[in-house]
Image 1: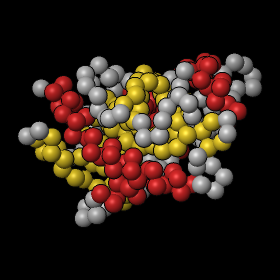
Image 2 (image 1 turned 90 degrees about the vertical axis):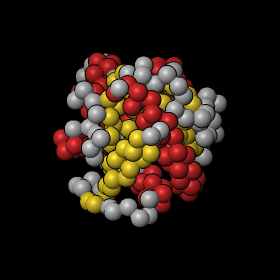
Image 3 (image 1 turned 180 degrees about the vertical axis):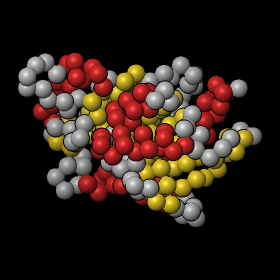
Image 4 (image 1 turned 135 degrees about the vertical axis):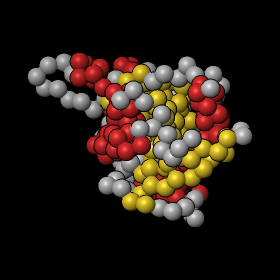
Length: 237
């Protein structure tokens, strides 16, 4: 398999720093969005050259980076590994979410009902080929995205509208761009912190909680890669 047929797209700086710590001897190259490198991952008896790509944080960088890697490498698979904030009481820290759907919820429409715009960016991901769990522990369901951290007063409404348990900044953009380009996309994110009626674990000057837990989440996600790739390779044969 040639380089670039599988892309691991990583967004936030803390997430990329954690990946970087796992591959200190890699040759790092620059793109308009950050760094990238290639590393061969052993899957069963195969060795697959994976491009790890720093896409940057937020929907703008995420969408642009996703289109960039598609145009440059024409990948067969894009894997977004990252973090998310969980809804306290509905999911636990350390749980991993494999997104079945993504919804960009921070669209504000003053002229009419925003439902049409939100539905336009609602993306369903085909996971029928993933017959076995990818992570441990694992939750499969809808993942929300917005260019902001979770606002405490919004959580009840988000639960009611979408039955969601977590949110991030980038997955909605990545899923939408990949799907528009007919590229298989998998989004797997780990819960680093919880937000509930009494506040957020990482809010009000406690960003170190997010940074420290990001390292643990990304290291564990890296360990799950061979399992995910093994299931995907069976689809190709």
